[in-house]
Length: 339
View 1 (cartoon, rainbow, N blue to C red):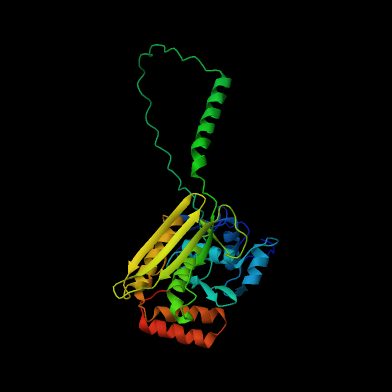
View 2 (view 1 turned 90 degrees about the vertical axis):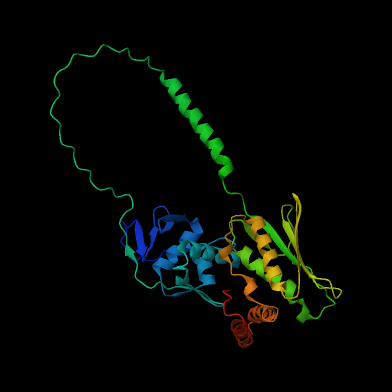
């Protein structure tokens, strides 16, 4: 880390514990429920900052200065690292990291940090009881020892095995994150109040992909494009006739070809269709994403969903009283919505 601080544990401590969660300082990992969650360097440095200075407000500017010293980073780097830390802590402990809107984060665990015993401690094995010496027997017939292989041949065999293992391990390395550009295609002839479906689709996909920093890096649509960028065109088409349906679409373009997702929907199922298409897009980049990682939009209806879009827009413009009133309306209309 760029700014050393005093640590509240002895210098020779290798593992720390908070409740049921353990932190391995040597291997830079989090262990809970018998599972080990390894963290990258910056993410673990951020965790160390929280462990050393709990219950204090750490602003985003301070975190960048102390964890990403000298590096050019965006707010998305901090957001992704916080998401990874909460995922490593698990559902029961992810609330220890509290978000202070427009300011930063507070690490507020319910207990105190304490050293944990080393995981590689092995209990002493009792010495076996010596058995009485056996009765003398006839000496076995001599066995011819196999010829000793030359040392050069043994070394060559070891090198060959190492090369084979490296060749098999190479494809298992994690690929670099893909750059994704989200573009909302809306009908400018519509009133702003009627554009909420495509804005909801855009915002919901953006929020989910922002937590997949290991797979995806979101790029600004106005920035210069890279040849490997994946452009995702999002649209929600209104019915044009009495018997027609809504269409929620996502069209993906990259150097590998095109892919598309399309859901036809009635007015009543419009929010559920938006949720389904957003999950299709996220799974395209992270096929192993658990469905429970993000709450379902299906808890909202077409009356509450526009309020959610307006609440997020009001919060982004620092109109706090308006945002709070809209969020309250969303909660009243959909108390099971877990966003």
